[in-house]
Length: 373
Ligand SMILES: [Zn+2]
Image (cartoon, rainbow, N blue to C red; front, side, top):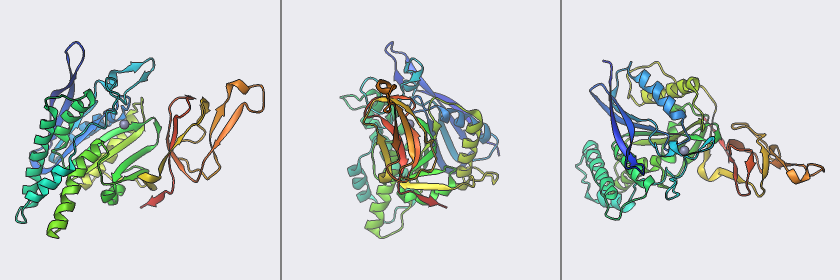
């Protein structure tokens, strides 16, 4: 049976004229039971490739029977994508309060501990999941309507999280500045890396640091850890959440987006969300790193930079990573300066502009990396 696509709209913010800013919500279902999947893109306004990925996903999913349902929210932050300065989109921070658009989600570990204490040994996994989803949604709604109000980013985040909190699989589609394709995977889901066609894998702690992926998996990982300790059982709620970085910001590429979508379909097929066997994860060398070894190279100068090392290149300690032009020394031997790799590394992304101030995050790099098969 083919699936059906329904579309609705939700107001996630209001502009200063009091007009609602809506996002489209596409829901795909074919009436069979299965996982709830939630996919959003462009929470950071300049990170637009996920929108074309969602376009290709919807086109493909229409042709497949699916189990469960899939909710897709493209361009989920219409405030962020509309903040332009000249040629650039300033889509990373809520301009009113300065907060990162991907850090305003709800998580309360104490609340999970309290919930875990109410669980009985006789409760089934499905009963616990149903109760915990309802419980989390009520907490998100309570936070959204607290009498003292919330900042713009938090309000928008909680509206989206109300949907994501009901999902078993959450995919948050982002981009880096100038970036390779990479994915953030929580350590407890490290074995899932080969299901994704991402050459670079960042393994993050199983703890909350503010982002949607963490807000989505932390409650479940914490709950199952507490229950496994308490009942010496084997609770696994099979809730997964990932942040996928699909290349560089400010770029839409339909052909690459088709490949990105095929790769996500291979993952959804492995999770039995779609009833096909036509998709395969790419046969690629995957390289992993723990978050503590994902290093930022800051500049201690201001100047003009050529980014010599490209995202994904393998560099040895001492190799040239960037070349700096010193405009006060164009007439002497100090006109250029080389920045060398401080250790063996793989640059994953770099700053998008050639003109940099001191203290700029020039590159983010894998160090102490390892191969994943
Ligand atoms: Zn982002």
